[in-house]
Amino acid sequence: MSQSVLHFALVGNPNCGKTALFNCLTGARAKVANYAGVTVEKRSGPLAGLSRPAELIDLPGTYSLYVASPDEQVARRVILGEMPGEVRPDALVAVVDATNIKLGLRLVLELKALGLPMILVLNLADAARQRGINIRTDLLAERLGMPVVETVAVRRNGVAALQAALRTLALDLKSRTGSLGLPERGEAVESLYARIDALLADCVEAPASAPRWQDRLDALVMHPVLGLVILAATLLLMFQAVFAWAAPLMDGIEALVGWLGGQVGALLPEGILHDFVVDGLIAGMGSVLVFLPQIIILFAFILALEDSGYLPRAAFLLDRMMRGVGLSGRSFIPLLSSFACAVPGIMSTRSISNPHERLVTIMTAPLMTCSARLPVYALVIGAFVPQRTVWGLFNLQGVTLFCLYVAGIASAALVAWVCRRRQGKSESFPLLLELPNYRWPNLYHFLLGLKERAWIFLRRVGTIILALSIVLWFLATFPGAPEDAALPAIEYSFAGKLGALMQPLFEPLGFSWQMCIALIPAMAAREVAVSTLATVYAVGGGDAALGSTLAHSWSLPVALAYLAWFVYAPQCLSTIAVVRRETNSRRATLIFTAYLFALAYVAALLVRHLAAAWA
Image 1 (tube, rainbow, N blue to C red):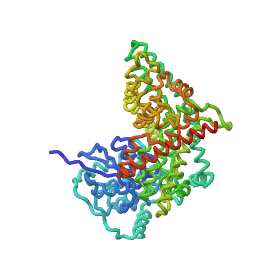
Image 2: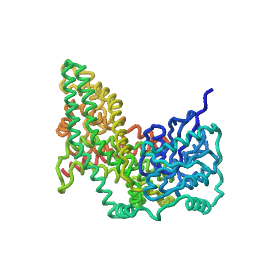
Image 3: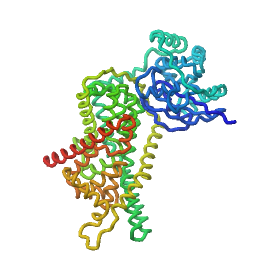
Image 4: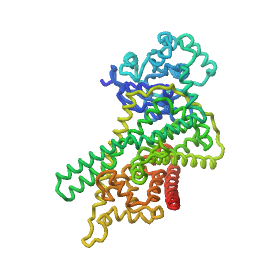
């Protein structure tokens, strides 16, 4: 007789370490970071080592069961068994930050009132001990009427006590069905916190204040003027590093791809197969693969900032400025996440409770330059912007890249301001955001994050980009030129004919038919624009050769217009799809797509003419 599957739900405040525990217990590799709002939807995984089959559910962070934001509603509905198609958890694993128990105990008491079996997990126990916090877990367990265990989720054996408690609890559990009713909020807030204070007084000994160095550092990074200077300097350093530090590695990859193409080409006879393998496969994928070092460096900075605790402070710093355009510091984390990819950035807007602010954040998130644009930016900047030092300190190419990111940010602010003017005054609430403690980035999570980002990029190279490279080679090769052809053979191909059809629309922007062709596969993956240009210009030999070809084929105003197009255009079907899902509105999705394409066209047109006039 088969046993039914037990379901345990991880629930707790944002940024208390639930997802790190989930990864330890299930072997998953879900993203973790040192700020609230990383997990915005439920995920589940098998929980091994128990006497019965079991599943662990990782829920978005919440401070209370009486919530308003979409991500917190997900947590409440799963706990209460109100989520369609989902089984109500058989037991709860309540996770509390051991360095800030008072904040987490409110949710623990609310969960206890539901009557479900529970385990209380005091995570970050090592950090609590380092601060001199002593927790009497036996007495706390007696007062709460549930097992209490300490964990350190970032250590190999840091969850052994929790695993033992789960095994013990699983022996007595019975699978449950149906839904729970949320108790009425009969207890006054003052009474609730009086109970919490009594528990803390009896069970916890803690120093009166946090370490002074954290306060001193906060005085610098959150200063209204100096803090902005530090933020701008940090971002500028990041973009400088993308070009300066990556150059040797990019040269190495380019040489390796060229060597591989030469070796494989020498083994194949001249003909269609030789062209397909060398020019279609190796050159197509190699022209994108060369940008891997730049993407890794970009994500190294982002991951370090995420894990250090700096990002929520930047959100507070920018809150007043963002309120001036109709957003708030709540939008900062989703917008910053969009620098990596707009899809998780848009999904993380679920932590925003104000519907109008959430919609505006969704509409502006793609204006943050995602990592998929970086290969296009790097190619065009490398071809047209000289590699020289300006102001005795900065690399001109890095400054240009920084300006492209700033253009996206400034445009997002303008769009948000216009939306605010059209909407009129709406209800506004002060930003309440928990500031995590500063910490050195965890090396394991840092390296794991870099590995995951590199693998995502390589997987795209080996799947989407490979498939599109093959399609593009076919379109650029067939049909062949007639015997009396007066033009290059590619102009008689399917790609040439398609580009000729598109060119009248983009002629005011100065785009050639080759540039137009590159926009089509870039809708599936922006990086493919690079390999498309290499294919249609019939350029081998890597990124340097392609850049040289573009420098001789395009004018500077047209190159800048092409960059402007990629700053604004929604060249990503995945982003459009997630906007449709998150807004649940065809109208909003159509407006989103149309306004970004219109913005891209107008921006490219203005940039071309302004640059031509300046020259």
